[in-house]
Amino acid sequence: MKNINFSNKLKLTIMSHLHLFLYLPEQVYQLLKLPTSSVIQTTLTISPNRLSLPTLVSVENIIQEINAKGFELANSNQIYKISSLINNYLVTEKANWQDQSLELNVTRISLQDKEFYDEVKKVRDLATTMAKEVTYYEDKNDNDNVKKAKDNARKELAKSVKSQPKWWDTRTGKLFIFLGKTAISTIWGRCIGTAFDTLIDNIREN
Image 1 (cartoon, rainbow, N blue to C red):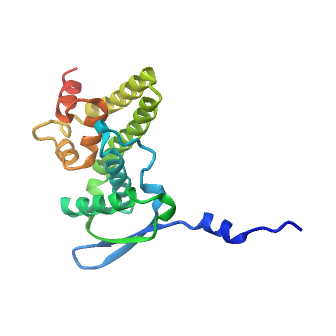
Image 2: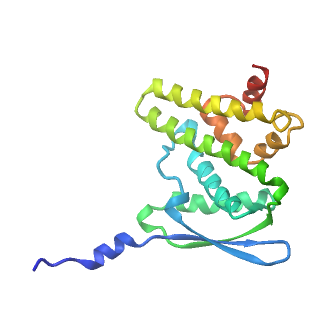
């Protein structure tokens, strides 16, 4: 009978997790357990013009999981906590990743804000997908598909902007102001090569 090294197989199945303790104002918390590999972005190339894209995309992956459970981060300090944790993972070989825990202050997303956060998710998904596609094709020097990825993302973003014009006003718009405090606007700027407010103004004018 052929000998099988079960210990090696077990090592391959071990998966690290993030344990997020989400604290509400009333000091009640909920535990959100996430497989680390599902939210930490390691496939993006770290190059001079995209230095922080892996961190930015990973931050938004985690925030999306928090939003999906019906919570939003209480303030920008929580984003810094997440970023620091992600950077610890990114400088470590994936095979050596271990479980980590993080305490975050959150508030509940109200029913009145559900439509708003649905729109945030749409723009976030566009940004993270674009980042992955653009960096993938840039690494292959495939300029045609780089342009196609950017153009397609911009077209989908334009649909959102035109469907909720008041939300997207670059001076008073609720959604624009919100996104400006997140990594989402930075991802758009890094990939498109245009400041986020300029991008939105151009869409609104056309």
